[in-house]
Image (cartoon, rainbow, N blue to C red; front, top):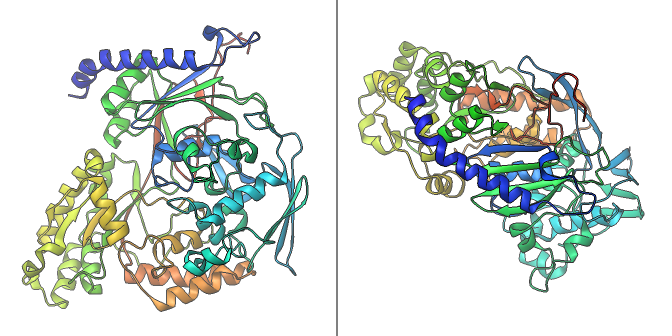
Length: 582
């Protein structure tokens, strides 16, 4: 059936792709020294969307194509070092080793909790502006202003314990008194030296600076687009560009259609191998597969596990990826009876046929998830509490909770409507069907309730009233156990996502002590204690860790497994045929 769909879809999709390539050629800057379009190295990537915004403090921070654009256009002060190339040919990062980017070096004074960053002097933005300390101050001032609709920059600075970036800024008094203005916590020493002061020691400080939320803006270019009504240029970054010092410069962006960048000729790490990248929106996955197989595109994403398994057998393409932070979790709401009973949650955990879901839903590209912190994260432990498929134990726990054979659970039918996003139907639909069958055999009156994505997000992240749901989009982009715990399992309001309304005073206390603990061993011990409680009490029900995957031209090299699970274009290159030259 997949082959028939491809045959029908390819002609129209190819026509649209050809139009995008033409648009990309037209968007390329014409100069006397420019190479002809035919000599350009162009990467065509097909996805199921294009960026909704380039504003890090905009409303689409969790949107995957938006994150892809942000990690390619914005340049951080620091980043993770490369660790190795895995068996799929994908590069993995070393999350215990930070290396310079815009900051060429740094030092830390423990007595004053102050970091001193020395900036590179050979950096120019896409507009040709030199990097200075003023760009760093502008970036932090914008984050502290809370002027965007979703204060991601503030959140990352808060995670890093930057002094002054506290929840108190959201109060009316802080707005009136000027506390949202940047003070001495981020200070310019000279044109190429900046100091950042913390409120307490925090191991997440440097990793937080690698997150796109604190990517450094070109303040001169940003100020050129400011208005009295929009002094921080949110409108410009939402519609046109995010001026920065990264390897790519935006040349054409048509929302819902394509996003085109050219290589920054000034990039301090050297010009990218590709001259241009075209990210094209091709909503139907079958169309993306078909175009890749014709050789017109070099890279595609957003496929189902079944499609990746199919392509892995095709000689004209290659499938690569790796495990990092992709997880499938069953969210059981602690405020929904009888899911507030620990025995009922444990019964659910034992009633899930993990191996069957891995085999039939993910075609082997997943492993069972133990605990609620991704396995590769620094500070993660393997918790004592583990839940294997054991329907007899699940039935026993239900009986102990007062529901032998599931009798009595019919009174809570609304609590057993298993929801998931309609846009994830191709992946989560088969999983949900398997779960419905397995859970009903034990006595849970489960029915499926797929929801439109906007409604699902509103009920999971805003109202937090969804009783039971499947979620595969929880990707903690701060690679540290403390970040993962803070994001979802610290009590609200500090716990930002916390979709299950989990609360535990001991977890909060362990996290609070770990956050500013300077001794690594004591910090890890506090995080380990918090993880043991989270796993034992089932703050949520961990199911699987799945493999991030892409399908691509077999000649493509340089794919990197990034914490956002999005592709960084700078390292990409095509392996040249023997005897050819650049």
